[in-house]
Image (cartoon, rainbow, N blue to C red; front, side):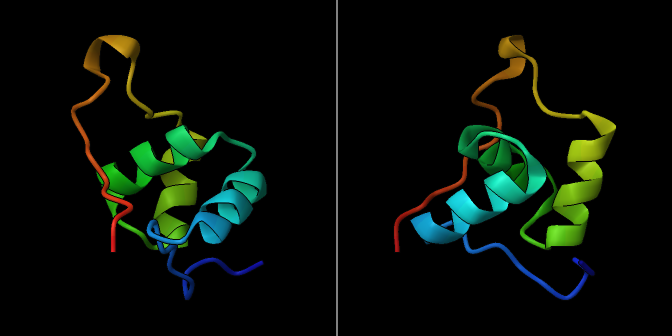
Length: 68
């Protein structure tokens, strides 16, 4: 799938669940990636492949609101 044209809407639980499954990560890790690189699926996928998610010591540095 070509991910560059898709965005991930963090306020939509269905999208979070779908994209988390697509990338093989938890929703928490997905939200962390979105907080780090934005909501473009291609950028999130690249970030996750590099394994750049936060360590527990840095947890909480990135905040993504799921409120509308």
